[in-house]
Image (cartoon, rainbow, N blue to C red; front, side):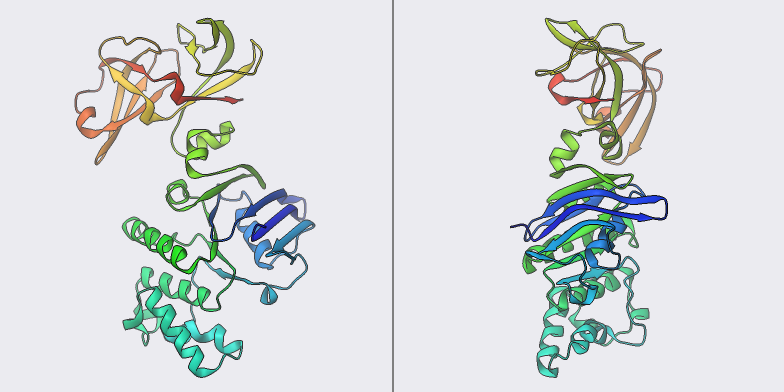
Length: 355
C-alpha cells in the first residue's frame, strides 16, 4: 500500500479550478516532486494534503486512513514553508523543540530529540543562536529539523530551496537527499525549478492548469515527455511541428521549411496525415561541416551562448524552425557566428508527441 493516495481530488476557488481531478500515489520512503509553472495548482495540492484546504471532491488517504476531513494537527504530516516561519524570539533549539513541547513530550526526551535533530542537520554548534543570526542556508536547516522533530510519516516542502542562491541551492539539494535517505521519511516537495526536480526526485508529477499531465522518474519525464507542454517545460527542447508522411519505407515527419522528411524511430501507431511534433533535446543535436548520413538539416550559426563548461549554439534554418545544440565549450569553440553547418541527430533520440 502506498503511503499517500490522492484519489480524484478537486478544489475550486470561486470559478477558478485550482486542482482538477488529480490522482496520484507516493510510496514509503519516496522523494516525490510536484513540478509546474506558477499558478498550476501544485501548492494548493500540497495544502490539501496537509489539511489546510479541504477538497470539493475526492479523497486523501495517508497510511491507509482516509484523512480527507481530518484537521491538520491530527494528520501524520508536517509542512516546511517556503519562508521557513521560524520564531524570532526563540533560539535554534527552542524552535526545534516548540512542536514537541506543545505535544507534552517530557523534558529529557525532548532535549534528546532536539540534540538528534541538530546533529542530523549539522547545526549542533548553533543551538543557542537566534534566527536573525543565521544565514539563509542555516535557517533552512533549522526549519527542516523542526519539521522532522515530530517524526511525521510524510513531510511536505513548499519550494524548499527558493530562498537560497544558486551555489547554496546545489549544496543544500545534496544535503536534503542525504537527510531524507537517513530518516526514511517520505518527502513531497513543490518546485517550479526543473533542474531541482530532476536532480532530487525519485519520481515527478508535472502539473499544468490544475491537472497532473505526466508522472514518472526524472529520466522518463525528460527522455520521453508525454505532451508538448512537458517537452517544453522540463528542460530545453527543439520542437518540429509537421505531418506524418510515407518515406524511407516507414512513416516520417514532413516539416514546413525543411526539404526532406525527418525519419522517425520505432513503430508509430498513427495514420499517415496525422499532425504531430518531434521533440529533440539540444544535447542530442550534433553539428558538422560535412553533410552526414541520415537526418541532416542545413543551418547557420546565429549565436553561441557560453555557459562555462557547456555552450548553447543557436542555429537558423532559413524557412525552417530555429534550433539549439548543446555541446562542450571546447567543441563550440570550433564554430563562429555565420558558419554554415549541418545539424543532425540519431532518430532514436527524438520523441514523437501529439500536438
